[in-house]
Structure formats: structure tokens, C-alpha cells
Length: 221
Image (cartoon, rainbow, N blue to C red; front, top):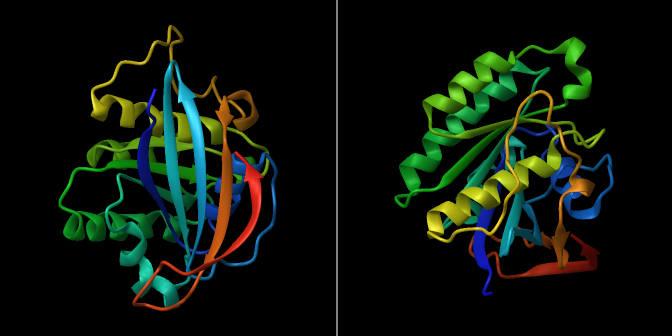
């Protein structure tokens, strides 16, 4: 079956764990990474029921000095992952600005997924699950909480986005499993089926083009 191909852009402040979350899913490992410069690209294929979904993931830089470059990466995106750190209230507020920017610049409907990361630091939580969930509901977004460090909930983020893409496509997955996201279901990314490879690219910082990149080694996704 021909896969559903979709562009997924990852947005959020520096330090919230955007890259660690993507790498946790793509490489099945946790890495403390240096700040992203421009953006990194991953291509991940997962299967929901009998339907393959290919996610072209653009992990963007969170530092303010790179914000002007963001439109290059979210242009023509089908879905956006909006990541904040549950121990940093400012990071939660920042995703509201990203939502406004996306809605102002992207006319086509897109799937939004708000993610509260670093639940392994729940004792330092500054953003309640209820507040974040209420906001996600108000903008028609999915909501997940995760820990890239301990691999809690990471796989469910990408699976839920894939399922929404399938719904939008009008296809029906031959899948008898009941999918739900609650406090009792925090699947690890390694527990969900994902195949094919991912290629990470460090994008050339030219504002005029994102076609040039330095390919790094292939990675299992």
C-alpha cells in the first residue's frame, strides 16, 4: 500500500527537549544534545494497522536568533509538534505564540499536537496537566505528556499524529487495537512498530534555501 506522506514540524523554546524527543523515537536512545542550528531532518515510517505513514520530521532550532528561519521549515507542514517543558511555565506560554504564527501563515488545515515534556521531573512541575490539556482542547490539538529521558509516552506522540493523518486521508486502518492516551498508558517508543530509516541533516543557514544539507549516517527509525 502506498504510504501517507506528511511533513511534521517540531516547534518550541530551546531546552524543552524537542531534539531529544525526536531522537528518542527515531534512534531508540536518549542523548543530551547541543542546541539545534537551523533544523535537523528525520524521515520515519510507521505502520498503523495496515496503513504505512511516512513522517518527514523537521526539528527546528529553539533559540530566539533562529526564529526568523522558522517559516522555511513549517511552510507546507501537515502537522506541528508544539513542545514545552512542564517545569518551565514560560516555555508553555511560548507555544501559544507559535500557534498564532502557524494559523496566520498556513491556510491549509493542519494537525496540532501539544506535548508537555520532562515528566520525569514532575516534582518540579510548573504547568499542570489540566491547564495544558484545557489549552490543547481550546485550539483543537492533541495533548500528550512525555519524558524523552525515560522514554515515557514518546511513541504515543508519533502514533497519535499518524492516526490523525490517516483520518484526514479518509483511509481506514485495519487495526482492532483500542488507542487511548491516559495516565495508565505511557507506552515506550520501542513498544510501537516503526520501520525504515531516518536521515538527519544539518541544514545550511542560508535564508534563501533549505535544499542544502550535510547528510549524517543513516539511522534506524
